[in-house]
Image (tube, rainbow, N blue to C red; front, side, top):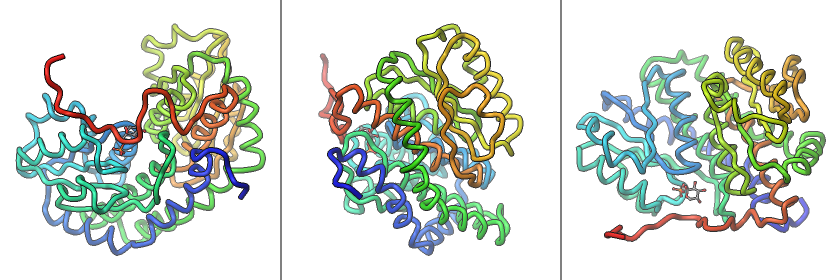
Length: 368
Ligand code: F1P
């Protein structure tokens, strides 16, 4: 690969390898998952900040679907307030932080431990504070990430959390062996599928869309079902990297108010769930139609062979088909690339967005 000027684009290209390395030690996931299953937790929370929180929401969706576990995602910044009232002995808190040093996440973890909860830490740094606080550890193997805008670490977090979920669901007796194997094969096939999005037609389309997006002030990122967690992450990327106002909604929820903001200056990023999720797919499609009629420009990400998704698309990026519950891994890549190329088109440095730092470490907040 050519030497890239920015860390961000180099790190987007390193996503497939980060995922492959993270998934390598199957036995480690199995060991942790078995211990967690044996402990028979009565409730599960998932927490983190920013991109890590979004990986946690994606994991909660997989835990609902594959393990039948009602995992409750909560922002780490909120966890220390009202939600703490529900944390008790027998609670498991899955805490995610690529650095393992984010103050807000560590505060949530310490508060939960104070209520006798156990912590499963998911981090890129085995020596980090989060790793030290955690009873169980799941490691991502993304290597160092230099750009402030997180990309490959998110991919690695998804991989680790999905692998844990498959093993946990199996240990709970919720997945048959052959289905678990099928899911593992699907996970292991994801790096190659991601690579297909990093060049050729998808990138040409994204560069073209970025030339349009550089003048956009408001973008709404619509997902539904398995693409909803990805929508949250893509909207965060757009805000951090391009300074445009990007906001995510579950597509049907978008009708309950925000749709009135759509006009001919709006960009809609529509993340179509795989067509096999029929109801969700048509729920999103009908909202996209209304947005198109209101004059919006529509950037669509859809599964290959999704014939309906082209109908209202000004720009269309097709992602290789995957197990729907792992869709976040492929669907986020066009969003990461759209962020990068729009930042470049706007003359911004995506490695160092204004006012953002890679690790948010806070002093005790006194009176201000
Ligand atoms: C969490 C995070 C990042 C975000 C920014 C600030 O970091 O919110 O997701 O991009 O850099 O910190 P971490 O807890 O995953 O290290």
